[in-house]
Length: 322
Image (cartoon, rainbow, N blue to C red; front, side, top):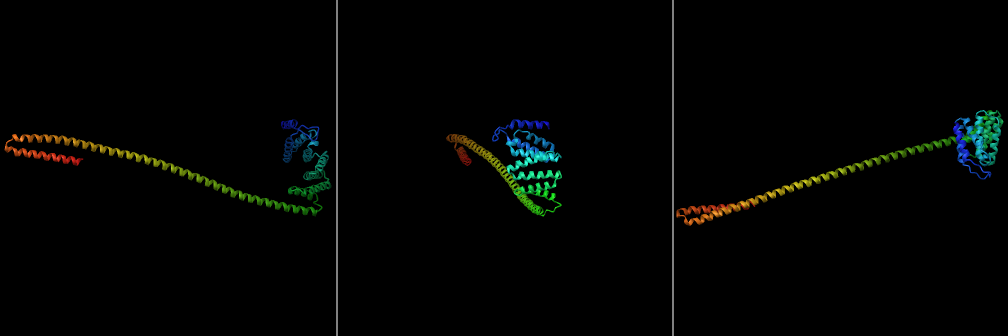
């Protein structure tokens, strides 16, 4: 905790440097804003001792009142509120009156409403109910023009509590009207929230449906791509198989043609060989018949004719093979 305040003090030393001229300053307002926010946060959590330390650090800055007048009033008011919460009432009224003077100069309706409400709390705590009632009503008068109905409702509740034994019809009527307005606003906010939730749910469903459709479309595209890929591979496989079959068939045809050519070649060679031999044999027999006796002539003639017939048969057989 001590380190925290040391760091805050260092921030203020290095970031808040005031000029002698009230219209000029080298200060960084961000530091003051952070310190005020920190103090108010601690105050809201009920950590008033800590809040007072935060507010005190800022209030020790020289010339804060003259240059950052509104911030000065905020720090002083915060200090007074936390002090009152701790029961430290000594000297608080002067601090509240100082804040009131600053707010009146600035003519800040919201700020005036809150300071009168805080002064009312002070007088109520010190059992001065007439002044507490007076400042509570002044707080409401300043709050009338504020848009924040919850602030007005809080103040008017205080007025009614302070006048519970007097039966203030005027403020009771304002209280009822204001409460009705708040109920209507709450109902309107609830309806808006319901409509928003409905639209949000509907939108979420539409988004979910679109996501589902997108996923389905992606799956379908992926499936189509897979099918196309498979068909491509299948077509390629069929093409390769077809080419292989054609090659095999062509080889078979080539082998058959080669075999037939070989057979034809052999038959021609056989034919030529046999024909030549038969021709020579027949010629030899023909040349021999002059030396053969008449009774043998018929026999030679028969053999020659037989050889001629064999030659013809060989020729016919060769033609058939071709």
